[in-house]
Image (cartoon, rainbow, N blue to C red; front, side, top):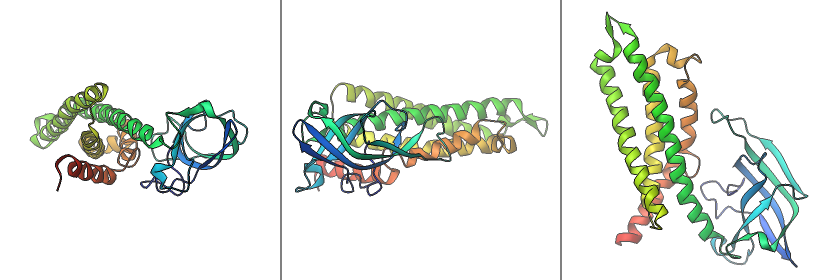
Length: 262
């Protein structure tokens, strides 16, 4: 649970959920929004501010929060254009008591947990959109061999087959890259710039692939008789969630400066 009403792309600077220590507990007050599965989860990895006398990144603490805690409230589930297979929720914390043993890592060192988690999450979400793009490609590919116009299959026209070739090229190269980055993460390497790069690239290209797949299939692709319109709606969130495509580019620029200097 990272995002709050006051912090989207500036998630750390906009964090307002407070956790004040009282004996063997922390008392939590505030809200989170756009939390995946927030309304149905038994546990939430929750990021809070435990020291508001320093900069937010120096006073952040991560908790394992149990959702049966008194004072926890689900305000609503959002109704989105896509990704409707899982709820996305706005949550409120009203004097929620969290035991001290539920602290993840150390007090005021939640930034380490957050950054480590985001590298894994962004690689995982990139793989999701890889699969989404592959599904759209396969639908369009099969249709192009079945549908005939001007007494020829659609695939026999280079305007279609080249479009499908571009889709395949993107998917195949990105598949190899995601696999390599995931392996490097597992081996403990710092690949934050590469994670940002593949997340941004795949998010953008999946939107294009789903658009192109609809174009290949035509009117049926735009209808609910084929899954492509859903794939297109599902793909868009990839450019927003787990860090926008713009934020990914900012992270790449920052990491390049850290790696190679000015």
